[in-house]
Image 1 (cartoon, one colour):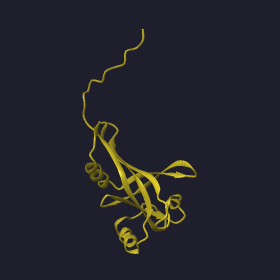
Image 2: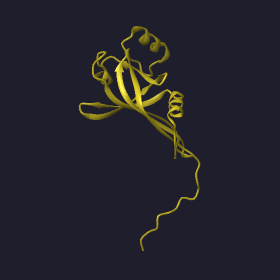
Image 3: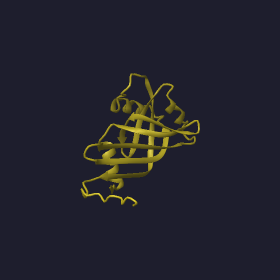
Image 4: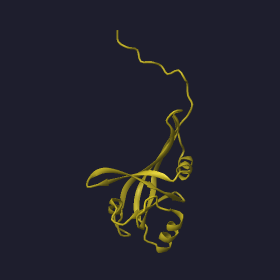
Length: 144
């Protein structure tokens, strides 16, 4: 495994459209698959009416929810690929021009009304690349 620099991790994140949002729901961790688009370094997802993710939205100036966003591309046969996790604050997008722009940039994968958008500002971006390595993996000696 090779660690990724922030810039490369964000570039890879921007190369895919599907990831997983990790957030807190009723004081427990929850994960939702969502599609996204990058706007600079910000991760943008759209929200459907009444979605559990809508609980993350706060009025502008209110407390922000801490979330993690993960995306990856890993070949299960060759064991090659990459994984990126961005951790930061999620905030409701309240600028009507931005909401309209994201409506054109980010088409939902589900047939639901999407009336809002969520911006994740990553504070911490980590990732790794799975690369070809030695083919001989040392075996663990069995007790005799």
